[in-house]
Structures are given as structure tokens and as C-alpha cells.
Image 1: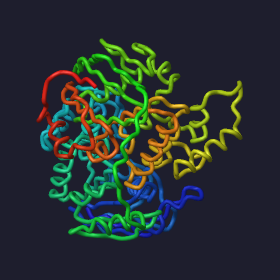
Image 2: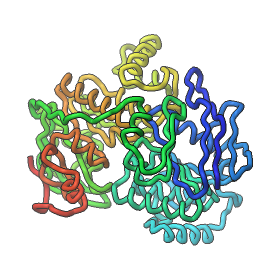
Image 3: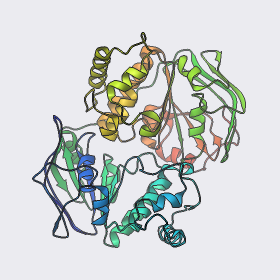
Image 4: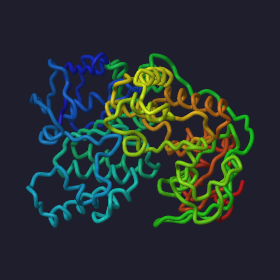
Length: 497
């Protein structure tokens, strides 16, 4: 399906999200949409997919026919489906029930027929999805796979993917890219929204770059990376040199910690984490790092061993006890666990502070929100609801909620959805907080370069095994990739540091 966007404008109050965008995408093309956070990428795609409506005057043309799209139902009816940064599924429900959502067919759909269609589509793309499994047991990558085949089943001929490679493993990304190439070969139009240059350059047939709501340029292979970066930011941006930590006293001491859930067990892990230090956790999704970081927050109770925070035994204590002693956990699922949809930025900042008296001081809350918005460069206003923000700005809002003082910061994919300039900015803020409070950081990331750039030491997870701590400065991406894949492990068992 050929797609043409003509003179698309969109305002959100005083914010001008899209400014007269004109774009033509041919059928069978994988079109990259590149830009920094807040550039207008997601807004443009939400206009095309019916989640929001553009200002009057623009036009959407599909196969040379002008269409009016006022809702996601309208969009899928004309063949446009969108896979969002945060999957729009229902985790407490089964996979097959989620697959059926939005499909016409009355109150009692033909489940046997739907199950067969589901199995056929999953087999076609080599997806290992059990229709009877619950969605909350799936990884982010598997939830993406479910949404892709659901949209295809509903008749999508244009498939929009918004930052689909954040929070998924390298193997899942490889499978996703293979799926998208197969769909394009079948004549589908793929629109791939990202801030990751390497993903766009590897996958896309052409790229459009947005900056501050405007289409500033387009490019076809061979791609000039430096030129793309300059178009995105208006300047050249580099990561800079690694900044090793100046460490202090022990903040967190794990002594022979053992953890288990229905999927896997982790045995006898020991780690001493010092003030100012950053430890990165790397591994395929579901290898145990998520359970490990939650145990450090008091969200998962160890089945053996001790957790000491600055010498205080918190083993078996709830998260609130950990938080009271300066432990903050920022989950990857922003709108499910980290933020509260429907509440404004001011509401969030007020709720995150210790209460001062019985009544809320709204004026003080407004001032606090203005300060945090400015400090963390959030593109929004104190009255903006968190769900109205772009994914990158939601991440900045989460980071702005960190309490004072801090002892330990635990982060799942802290720069998920952020462009390179924002990544540098956020890590500088995090490291400043470590220096200011004498805090330490443990973080999970699927971006191996980020893990190596910002960690002092690494722990690698593979099927419940945990490596000895590894010096990040002397480790290469290739070595880390092999360990993540289960190769080059010097010994079995736990970790001691």
C-alpha cells in the first residue's frame, strides 16, 4: 500500500508537534523515521494510525485515495496498524484472548478458527507463542510478536513500529528484522520509527529525519551516519570518553543470595557494591537479571543469603523498607509500573515527595514541577498527563522522580527510547547524583555499548548463571556478546566480589 502524508500539522496547546509534514512511502518499502526525543515522530505516526487527529488542512492518501482516519478502528479498516513502544495488550489475559481483541465477530467469536489462524501466522514467522499462555508471562519481544500477528490478522497492510528494538534482546531483534523484511517482500509497507542509527541503517530502504516537528531531510542507502546525526540534532554528537568512578564505602552487600521463580533459579551470588560505582547487568531477556535487580529493591524475597544496605540487614524486608533507606527502583514498564496514567507531572512530583502536613501545597507542587521539568529537559508542562508525553519524555519524568538522599539506584533500561544526546545527558545526571549522595547504581540494558560505556563492572546472566564481576573498561562488545550467548564462561555457579 502506497502512503502519502500531505501538509500534516498538529498542535498540543502551545507545543507545535508537527509542522506541515509531507512524506511519500511506496508499497514494499521499509521507511525509517528518525529523530531525537520530542521531534514529532510518534505524533506523526499516531495521526496516521488514528490515535490522534491532525489539525485541519492536512491529508492522508492511501493508494492514491484520500482517507479520513479518526480512530484506530478507522485505521485498521483502511489497512493501517501500529505497534506502540509500550504494547497495548492486557497482561492478565491469555495470548489467544489478546489476539481476538478488536476483531469483529460479535460476542462469541469462533475461537477454534481463530486458534488455527493464530497458529498458522505464528508458524509462518517462526514465533514460539503458546495461545494458552498468559501475556504477563511473555517477554517484551514476544508481546511484540503477538501484536504483529494480531494486526496482520486484522488486515493491516501498513505496519508502523514505534521504537520496537528498545527492551528486547539481540536474538529477538534479529527475528523482528527478519519478519519485517519478509513482510516488505510480500508488498507490505513498513514504517520503522527509531532514534537508533544502526537499526535504521541496517534495516531501512529510505529514511526521513524529523527535528522539532519538521521534516528536515531524507536519505537513501548508502547512509552517511555523520550527516544523519547532524540532521537529527543540528550538530555532531559523540559519546565521549568513559568516566571511571571514584568509589567509596560499601553501599550494598549481597552475601550468597539465592533466588528462584517458576522459570529459573539463581544460586549463591555475592557482590559488594561501593558508593559511586555503576554495575551493569547484561544477558538475554529472562536470564535472571530482572529477578536479581528486584531482589536488590526488596520486590523479590531471596530464598537464601543476606542483603545488607550500608551494613543494615534488609533481608526479607518489603520495598518500602528499602525505599526508606534510600533505594529507588525505576522499572522498564513506564506506564504500568513507573508512572500513573491520568495524573499530571505536578501530581507525580508531589506524590514522590515526603508529605509536609495534611494538605497538599499546590503552589509548591507547581514550582517543584517547573524546576524538575527544566532540570531534566522534559518536553511538557506541569499540567501534562504522563501518557501525553513521548516515550523518551516519560523516561525523563521517571528519572526526575528519584528521591533525595539516595543510597542505591536500580534501573531497568534507563535510556530506553532516548536519543544519543539524551542518553549522555541522563547518565551525566545519574552520575552527578551518585557523587552528590554517595550512591551506587545497578542497571539493566540490552544495549551492549551502553553497558560497556557507563558501567564500572558487569555481571552477565545466562539461564540463571551469574558471572564473576567483569571490568567493563577491558571488555569488548564481542566478548560480552559471547558471554551473553553462553560461550566463554570460566566456571559454573555463582558470583563473588
